[in-house]
Length: 137
Image (cartoon, rainbow, N blue to C red; front, side, top):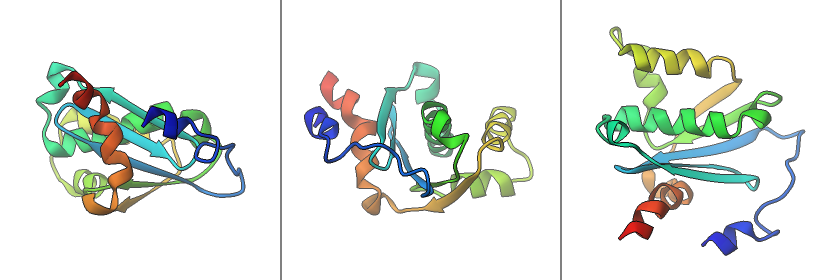
């Protein structure tokens, strides 16, 4: 998989005239993100993060992607696809954890459009969010 991701036909220089597309996903043990044709990233969750709710993990995946892809996001708008209505849910909730609100404030520095994409259509990020876990088995 790593060889395929590193192939020149998949990874290329960004088109600065186009909006970026970021796909995020979280599993029980890892988060993964993909910026179309530019960058793939994943990381294992620590024990505290593994205890997060599904919504918190999905939000963490968005935060992780924004931190990883920050240089690109500072200069261009991006569509962020996730398989849950995470941001919409957090923003509509009247009482939200302080940590989630800090994440929302962090995301406000970027020009993001959030889009929902069901897990079956978000397959490309399911793999990075599970790569390191599968490697441990």
